[in-house]
Amino acid sequence: MRGVVMYGPGDVRVEEREDPRIVEPTDAIIRLTATCICGSDLWPYRGAEPVDHQVMGHEYVGVVEEVGADVRTIRVGDFVVGSFWASDNTCEICRAGYQAYCPHRVLMGTLGTQSERARVPLADGTLVATPGMPEPDLIPSLMAASDVLGTGWFAAVAAQAGPGRTVAVVGDGAVGLLGVLAARQLGAERVIAFSRHPDRQALARDFGATDIVEERGDAGVARIQELTGGLGAHSVIEAVGTQEAMMQAIRSARPGGHVGFVGVSHDVAVPGDELFMAGVHLHGGPAPVRQYLPELIRLIWDRTIDPGKVFDLTLPLDRAADGYRAMDRRTATKVLLTL
Ligand SMILES: [Zn+2]
Image 1 (tube, rainbow, N blue to C red):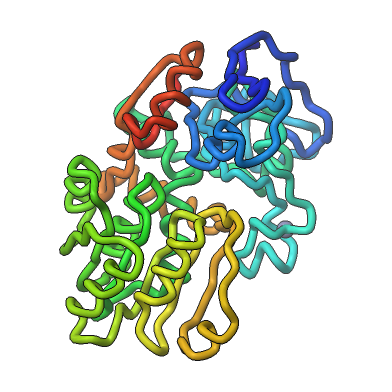
Image 2 (spheres, rainbow, N blue to C red):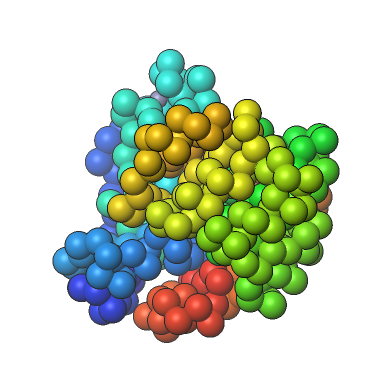
């Protein structure tokens, strides 16, 4: 089968990879309908993480082709969505809603889903079947549920976005934009998006942002203070993962407020004295997307939400290298790869 391999920073190739096969009796093999490139794939692409002939991709939707002997609920022919962590969904951690931390978890990125087919471990726990074969126009939104929507949703929940609350969103990539959507769906009264890109500002407004702040860093924090009567936001979503973004998020929250941080942390060091004096709740990390998949699929199936709008470039899998280049140069927010 064809699949993406990152030979080294900036060097992405689509080449023949070995076909996946059932290894454990709890595995399923899926034929991908679509896959995509994640903002986190840019860290190794830019040399910020080591990479050497790594198979790529952790987001996936597709049709089940084969199941192992112990798979009970997922069937051949099902159209399925899964998260970037495979998880059993039965252990104590999973049942508490933290499937990304399942003791049996498998990181899908190590299996590489930017490919024609993929092995999905713990299929019954990991995969959620849609009510039927989706209309083609629903594919991008279901694809978004696999990671960026689920991650934005977790960030909004962790930040306790809800009725009567003002939510600030740091980061205007796909996760930040879908954090805006999630915050509004969860009932937030006001959603302030930090963004200085006109196209992303427009999408943020489309997803429900009520205010846009172009300033960043301490100037951005000052704008949040102005917009919230000097108090700060009740809820802040951090969807970048840099020092500046994390401090901007913590400083934008009011005392007693909540910060949901889901940007993959790179060299972030939070000063203890400032954290001590801030009096804010911090919760984040790899999102337990699996927890939200049934609800997100229902909202997409009912056409209540349209998160697929974050994909602003669609390419065939064979042109994945062009997709990486476009995201690296920020000419695309999020790239959908079709098969
Ligand atoms: Zn588990």
